[in-house]
Amino acid sequence: MNTQEFLASLTQQGVQLSANNDKLNIRSPKGVLTPELSAELTARKEELLSLLHNMKMPTTPTAVPLEHALSLQTIGRLIGGFVEQSALEWKQPLIDPRVMAQQLTVTFRPLPDGYKNEEVLKFREDLESKLRDYGVTVKPWERATTDFRFEVNIPIIKWKKTIKTRIVSAGVNAVIDVERPSSLKRKLGIFIAERIYQIYSQLIARGRKISISRIAMLTSWAEDHAAQRIEDPTNTQVILLKEIDNQLADSQLPYQKKIQIGLNTLTRTYSEIVIGVSREKISVLNMNLCDSLFSRKELDSFVLNSLIPKIFVPIAPLLLNRFELGQYDPRQSDYAKKLVNLGKELVVTGLFPQGSKLSEVIPRKSQREIVSIMMDGRTGVSYGFVAYAEAPQYVGKQEVTEDEWESLSPVQGFNFEEIRQNAIGRWYIKTYLEAEYKFKQIPDTWLVSSRSGSNKTNLNLESDITRIGLKGKLYLQLPQGIDSKVVDIKPSYDVYVMIAIALSAALHTPELIKNGMPIVHFHGYPAFEWLKPNEYYAGVNNPSVPCGTYESGVFNFLGIQKLANEYGDSIALASLIEPDHGTNVIAPDLNYLIERLKAGCENGQIELGGRHFISLKLKNSVEGDCKVALP
Image 1 (cartoon, rainbow, N blue to C red):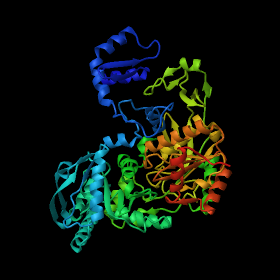
Image 2 (tube, helix red, strand yellow):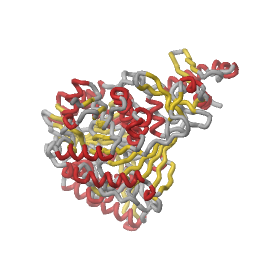
Image 3 (tube, rainbow, N blue to C red):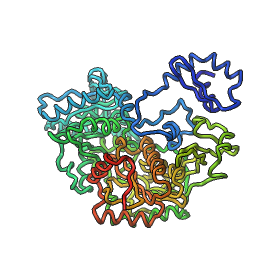
Image 4 (cartoon, rainbow, N blue to C red):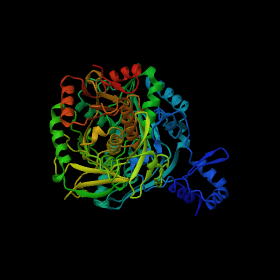
């Protein structure tokens, strides 16, 4: 076997290798390191050192204290369902923006002739400097792009055109552009290009799916957006700098109105992120539509904690190939029925505004189809989710002693010091609670959740609720009789977050989830004053990683662990804050959760948007990351 296969075999047996300059450090379970294996390790030492050095991630202090916590590798593999991948086939989650920055490459598109917005120009200059300071690679436009030719040929109307342009290479994570003025000539070109695309899709493609690159080829010759000059739109984000939209940045703007303005701004400019700039403020807009306002004096914090995480982990749905697919009967699920009732009870709160159908927000067919492909076929967008974690499922002892732990076997791909298995294949994890290590069984974790794009306050029991499971790998069960190829039923973007919350609660706060646990996520925040005794929050200082990433799941997992170590079993309600995204609220009692959310909204202490985030941030800066409301 080659060196990579040899290392994977060692990992499966519980042998842990690490490189320290020219030394190979070895940790092994008792009885595994035979004389033959030791001899082979010696013979392969140089190859192993080279491989380990290449795998090693840059190390800087983490943004979240991990003392006594599980390693990021273990948390990421658990909540991501990566059990079948070897340690060499996946990347660990990164939660430190300084480390994220070192992995990023961005480029700035040259300014249009005669561009004169002084505030944007000054910000652009400062932004480039800060990105470089944090270790981001900023490539000049000439080096970040390559020449590209393509031919548009429509035989039916005998139209043929060869286009030469420069496109941003796939290895670039973001291209930063400025808003460009429109012109009558450009509008006419776009109209002609769109008509050509419609003819092509109807007469040539005849209903077949067209790739993103092909759509771009057919329309980009008339465009002047950075997004039309990108080799891989799924890998490279477009960030647009423009004069701040004071209406959009107004915390008093109704959220439904913000959805309309925000989505139109993003789709009109082909941008994943729009940064608004004024003399005093910086605004940031992406699909979450729950972003913060920053003072220009807070440029350091904005770049490090908001922009870099957004570039590093862009919003993206989980593809269906990440799951083992199956079906279930929602009529037989008490949790599904509870979820329907939960949604109906929350209609009065206004926390779940209706999103938009892409056909309503994006008028052009070519744009709709590009966005639909990137969103894994979703035909619309919606905000927030409701979910209900089922009671954890165990087989055998829920907890073992340290002596029993020492007798357990390694689990392929996991750190032997953190996860082991018994004779029947049940996994146990070493976790730190109440100032001591405990050895708990990892339960089968299941939850029901609203599908992506559904009306959260009027869920259809038979078609709107998916069932998601974690048993080493991820499972997705659709309602019986639903054909996902015909009906637009996709799992929520926030699957990793739901799984992380449910699993962390089972391991660290079992009283929260022993009878099932409702989870409500909305794109806003509670005020600090809303919290009552035994109600806590965590996460306000986390980097602004978007939904749809298992980095966001890691933060929620760690948040529950930290609350458990601070407050034990006294938690009646917990708010897990996701900066620039929203809040996950959990409680062991469904009626209590509904009552508290209704009261918070009625009293103006819970609102969509970012207005109340400031009160949490201010309290947090004085008192620490986990909060308790005092009597």
